[in-house]
Length: 128
Length: 505
Ligand SMILES: NC(=O)c1ccc[n+]([C@@H]2O[C@H](COP(=O)([O-])OP(=O)(O)OC[C@H]3O[C@@H](n4cnc5c(N)ncnc54)[C@H](O)[C@@H]3O)[C@@H](O)[C@H]2O)c1
Image (cartoon, rainbow over all chains, first blue to last red; front, side, top):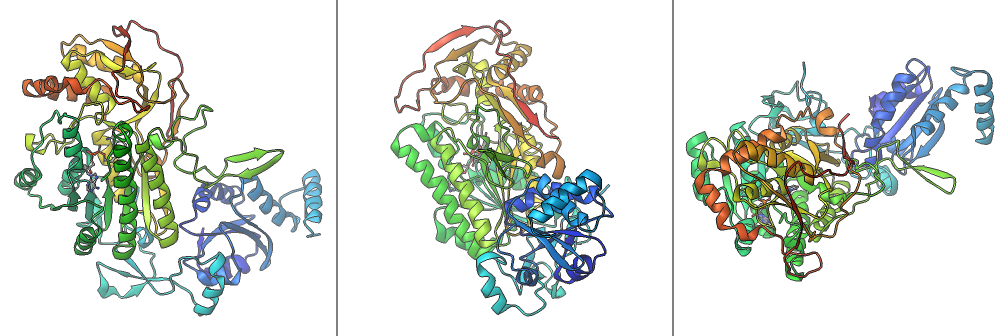
């Protein structure tokens, strides 16, 4: 799950799948607490959406390139572009929502009623 | 099967010294500074303080791969790891020094004997006689071949402590050196101020010294379960911070509380000093990339560790007076002296406990599994929870086996505390992440205490100081005997049916 500034390019920007990334640091208490949730989501969405972490202190270029202003920052990426970003502790539902929105935009993994709700949300967010 | 700390890496190792491109605030306000400073490759490198010949490398070697980490009694341990114990002459400090020494750690320590002095101030003494430190050191060397690097020192003497830290360069520091008594902190203004000065300012000064002299060291700082209090809502006492799935809802809106420090509700000015420590330690991890475990320890009981039982000269202290005795230790002594066990108030108070030997194992596991630089972590160190009246019943039962007729008495509670309350303690990190499994049954340890204390010379030491047992120090500031509310025989009374919960899963 742990990325470096080098592997960020391959695993996130060049990924064929949507990706959720957490920017974290060891001194950030919410970052530590969210670990089990991230592992759970990584398992639940295996093969559909990858979940990674990158430490901003250990990889300051990543922090600079993405102008990280607070921790934890969660961001979804698709086709090398950042899709959505949230800063501060998030509940599992909110993180899962980010993943589902990233998937929905590809028409992947959800269907029917769920798809309609997600599309509405995406419109609200200005993505569609 | 690989052990609990096998996959930790250089990031956790106090021998790793960071080189180059280290920025303590690589987000937020220092963006512009980083931009100015960084090239394109911002990789952090380390040098191994134990193997400088390796040059600079990426900190990715696991403990299992590293030849400096070798197999020990509980998982891997850093070869000859240098551990400094602050408060080494104390109840826990001495037992830990012996255990670490026997396990191959290089132990150093300090103490200013404030515990000996304050117990003497009360007119009390340790029931298990202890030698002067010179004799203790001599015995440790004779029996186990140990060579502790010990100095008499107050942690607030910062010049002296600085020199000692610089000489030893400890890779872990166990900080026990505080005045650990709630009643002592409630005697009067002088005592309250002395406790907060000693504990809070002592710790604050220590943090600055660590930052300047040994920033890589792993600080294992003792807090107490009493920092949390006992919230009447029954909300679980999490390990320091709220978990990620805890939320706050208010007026139809919702926020994640994940990672926020949980509210503290300390129960004396001593406990307040520990809460202040908690914030000082947390902040210094955040500001300076120090690393620390803040150990919210339950009430300790018992006398036994393999090493302290080896020779009478190696025993650790054991106090029973109203100021320094902890509840189980006090009750056993009372049972032996023929004093009805002194339950404060209803006796329905629920507390978290852990036996001395189990607590020492936890400490070794924490020492051998350092947090990452910058990481402030909290563990609840508790192996069982009991109501005070239940503890009294257990002690009466074990006492009976030793031929003692034990009575119980409820006395007016000198403290200001909630006497009937729910309690749910979360203690998952030690069992789930640090491989700890309690091995000491409460009855077994109580039995060992009876066996030791019923030796005639120890029993007479209890009787000699029987007058220090009944509480006189009230939270109101008055000095007054606590009146007896009722006296009864074990098994005679039915107790409230609420019970605490210990969540280890
Ligand atoms: N025993 C328990 O039940 C219990 C429970 C929870 C937390 N704790 C904590 O664990 C730690 C150790 O407890 P203990 O029971 O061994 O107490 P203790 O009093 O026996 O040990 C503390 C030692 O530190 C020394 N000390 C105190 N202030 C000092 C200073 N300024 N400079 C140098 N040395 C100093 C004392 O002389 C003593 O020898 C304490 O911080 C205490 O608050 C203890």
